[in-house]
Image (cartoon, rainbow, N blue to C red; front, side, top):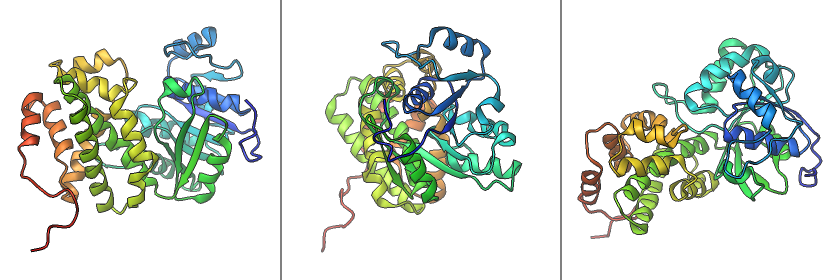
Length: 351
């Protein structure tokens, strides 16, 4: 792949923290664009395996380019980099940022491709990264960019056309990420609404769990469409209540990502929800999925934020009650359908 769509951007030194399917799919994409890429994994065994096989662990065995360097040393993936991309589980983003902080040089752009909200602080992932860098290196003041949108690793790893969003308070950083990573198969848009983009990335996983639970109960397309549409309304209500741009909720990071996550069997959240809906205990459902289910990680912070802002989120609340074991999935559906009848639009009928 050449740099024909990169608007003249030159190859960059890129560190990728995370050796899961999404991190490796991004590393492959970046390497094929001519960037110097180093992938960090916490496991020496994973580094050795990937180095030997050069295969991304996805159906179809997509190839990891030989040019991608692999390491279990944080310094190797953080020092002297133009861009550092965090692609770990949301629960490890804070600790990973803290480990990387001593090696980050001034001017490095930090990118987060992990979706979630931190329990307790209710911070987005870019806020978590910025907080940890500020604690360790006050002099850095790094630019942090959220990379989000409908982007299954299973498709990105095979060069299927994908569009995502680079969101940041820093226009310069967002434009840099757009220029560096846009190519023939990845189209990157920019957004100034980083918090809105990240909120969408966390919330859509919870709605996808709800859609999966409905599927597990044997419900069909009508139910899924209702959950996606009313789930989108919940996302928009919460986002606008905390100052996010309403337009964000009609874009790739919200509507686009919600549609793909709530409707594709590539979705871990959908698969996990389907198992829960069919009666499988939550811990066993996660084990069967065999990967991180970010909707479950984000759920406590989502519910806490809903309570703090006073924003009604009945679907997210019901997912929480099902996951906690308070309500059985079949009863959750009846409770949602039995809620007080309302108008869908914002304006009540005139008297």
